[in-house]
Length: 553
Image (cartoon, rainbow, N blue to C red; front, side, top):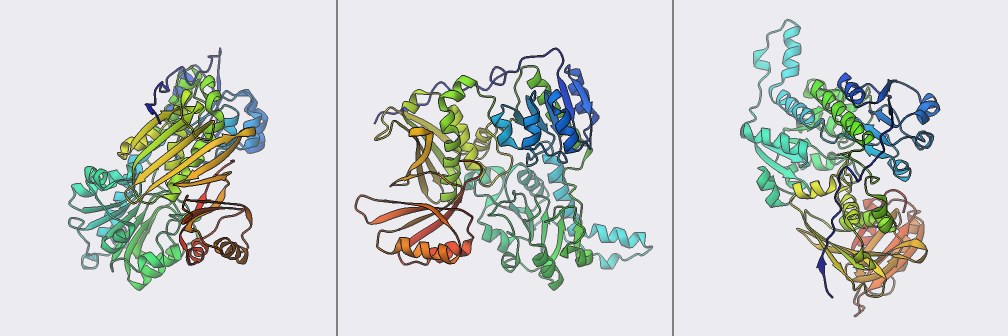
């Protein structure tokens, strides 16, 4: 098999995201925005209509007049609104996430979606540090005491941060900044992040440890991860019981990472000395178990991004991107793919969705920090410009545990985390006309996924590790590794039957010596860890994984 290095790299430049300049473009702003953003749009030659608070019905009626829509978190850019926006070329979200925008519909319509992924990094990190210091020195309750005309110096004995151990869960830009300041004031920093290697963590000044060590060794714990299936309720009674007595917990990341009732119980029992929480399971939060914890908690109403500078930064960032795109330029923080030239998209369009799903699948099968990613384009696919497939694969991999991953910033994430990405091409594709293969190497294992497009443009996974399979990727799957022996399929099926989980399809692949096999069970709904544990208890099954693929297949 002859390989050659991937060539003809796709250059993302002003010609990639090209929009013809109109005599006068129109921009609609439907949420409150710093005046500087409006000024940038006007200076760029656009007519700007500022209508914060407009309702969905009114928006649908007028959106057809506009070339661009700028929102924050209040406006929901739904499928109905986007379909009515017949002239829309770009939607900008002045903030980090794009949960309020139907990105899939926007992509289908060729509408660029942009955000400001780093606009509030400093604000969120500094709010975390402010809460941690307030906890250590009891600032809020001492302030309250003084304002009640009391002088209770002896009551408010604090804790010095120097020499304390800070456990940081999530080593993205915010977690890194919190850790750098903590290091500067003499704290010992532990970091947990499945995407960061030990070497990269050391370069950043952290000792990389497993999550269990964060719980057992930390005096303070701060969270900086998105809310996913894996991170929801990661701070609960089970994890709190493993922590040091007197630990303090800070969360400025996402609501739902902490079981609020379990934390409240631990505070009242004295296990947890205090907590500072900025985000909640339900927002606005007016009824939480934490409200009954008195002076041992500091609660703030989601203020992580609430600084004048952060609001200014996101307004300027998104306004500049809208201005540039409407003038025929490039969007630096595009969330979707219309920036690729149409002729390049046409060559690989049937593989784009499959590539992202393969990236997500191979990452969910692997454990531990990623060391390297190898991408092979085989057969006729090797003759095409496959840079877009690389971007889609990286997006699928990193989106498993990170927010706001885009086709534009995915390569930057890989670089920041010290992950080696290698591309290979070969004319030899075996039994298929062409195929795409991913090899993911982590600190714990190596996983391989291969896929192809069959007749009638049907996507298929044709290899999992060393096992040949032939399955259509679905939204929910259980993948098992097991000894090839009778009864395995029946026992797995019975467990799913008992738990009222419907099987849509099932495929088996086994090694040439028939000693071991992999089974892919496509199901209609998600399954929890308890069901996977039942499956793994079957004699002969070595591992059972639930794989969730988001969006349309």
